Image 1 (cartoon, rainbow, N blue to C red):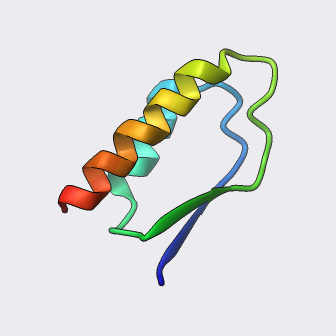
Image 2 (cartoon, one colour):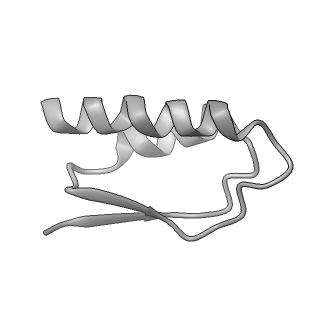
Length: 57
């Protein structure tokens, strides 16, 4: 199982999308924290969209 680890998102949706796009195909993504103070719904949507994208690669 390949696991991708991300952290320190700080609500930066553009940077998060760039990192997830550059990440090689993984089975699971683990967030090590620092996503507070921002719209968590948007971050969650990006992660869900990325999961769909990752599974198609």
